[in-house]
Image (cartoon, rainbow, N blue to C red; front, side, top):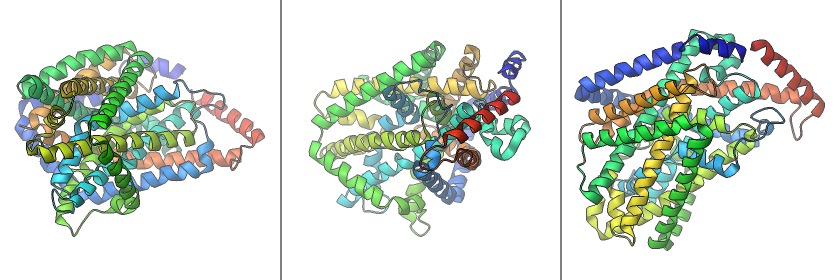
Length: 528
């Protein structure tokens, strides 16, 4: 801790300086040459998806398999903290925060539009058929199911284990100490942290851009507000002020309150849709779609469709884009989830991360997807709407439609603020030597950077704005994916050594546990 305080007084970290410089350069280039910026990004993104699609699919499957292994391994008994540490947050608030940070805007934006899109252009079936409808739900469950949360979970576990159990600071690079040793404190460690910061900025900026597009779409549909980059820029500016104020108020206040608000608004919206929508169809598709998802999980986890052009194109547009987006989000979500998970066991953590959010996502897509497709079958114009206005068009055909639209706008804005709020904290932490309480100035710098890069990506995306956002997510994820592999290996190496030292099988050997804990504490004191 003493060394950390000394470094704080020396000024900004090299990670902060280099990361901020890279983002500033991208913002300037994107602002001056938006069309060229978007074009180059699109070409790189296309190359990545075609060349590394197999790699993304295989990597996500391996990570999910590793999470399942931890669930049943004696390693799962290890606590993310010292033996006497207790959880800082109540379980309900903990689940609300990890869910809000992990998915947020994506659920609202794609909850109805993604199943509709798959129904209109399915991976393998003929469009607008019963087979297409079945594929629509299975495909949505794949994109928002176990795989993204497995990635979040591995990054968070590595960070929480390193920080709270081994006494290291909260930097991504420090999780690699078991395989890199003290080199994590030099240029190699700085490079790892810069990659993490870059991925975080891009990943969150994509989410903020998506949120701005949908808020603008809702305002345009409901009140006739123009739908263009100027209005979207104003929306980003207003929400930026709000989330910077929230970030300034601190983790335990701003983010916790907003996360609880998110869950209340989302639950209210979901319950109303269940009641006014096709309830029986929702329940049937949820049950059948879940069975189809689980039955084909292994095949669809690895299928890159090399001999099926229709599905190959679909994968590049949807699943591989999502795999890139989730990977770019993983340092942000992982760092945040690690911060709020102190005192939980590895097994408890994995059950929560792979269980609760996935179940909620399945219920959400079932409700909004079935309602959206059913309404679209009766009002074909809705099926042709852009995704940012589709949800509001669906609400317009339901009872209490205007009220539902207002709740949805409030939910999007709240998710927007929560994600950006959490991200400013995480970025501040990653660029201030891993401190758990980054300065307000650093958080403001990163808040402004997030807003700027989000708007630049919208400008580069042209009329829809989505193309540049998708490209940025896919590109930024590739280099950081190699860091995630190293984090997984390091976590297993360190945790397995501790399991052996503790004699951890069916129960902990108390004598060996006390001796090992004393040894670790002595190492931590020497390190500091």
